[in-house]
Image (cartoon, rainbow, N blue to C red; front, side):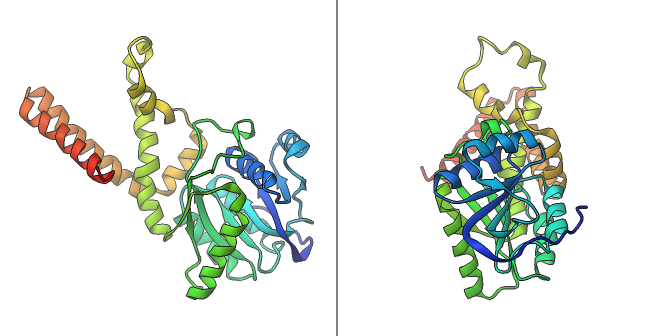
Length: 294
């Protein structure tokens, strides 16, 4: 856990944003916000990356003395790193400032961070930008990463409706330069249920799919289908380990349903039951068209 050090805590500078972590997410936030005229302060575990970002994107370093000058602090790290930062810096955030995260799970993050925020005058909002690539690191970040993408927000439950609306409006205003296409408000529980299917399961399937020996000989025999299904097989394993374990119950349920569905296809093939196979394929096609409104 980080140690608590008291720095400058007072009135924040309106619109100033602090970013912790300059990987793909944090770097993209920094580029978009800087391009949109926001003053961006940042910190990063690797000093060389921070110095590179300070050449044309980051205005100054985020330190214990400058955390309290930021209206918005974006924590763009792994789940445990996010919680550790808040534990170690909770006394440095300015009153009425907002802290958000970018982590792909919300129950673990929000449970810990809401509890800490209640003891202070600043606010925490759980966030998950639904954007990214199969690559990681500041070198792959870009200012248009979030353009048109959804942003999921989990507000604290102990605010009245008016205060909650005001808080979420402030987050949207502060993130306006990022160009998010829509903001979805939900609970931490509902977020983790849905994300287990829309994101985590897709990564598991893609990652498992390329383990077939046939994948080594795909060149000359593959096109769009192979490319689409294997795009997210390339991943940051330490990060996804944390995300998947924090959402293990929901992800295990989704994997179980997928295994059951695959078993039905396999049985139809093993028994050469063409009628059953066509029925299964048609069912999937029908569900996909219904989901897309076609």
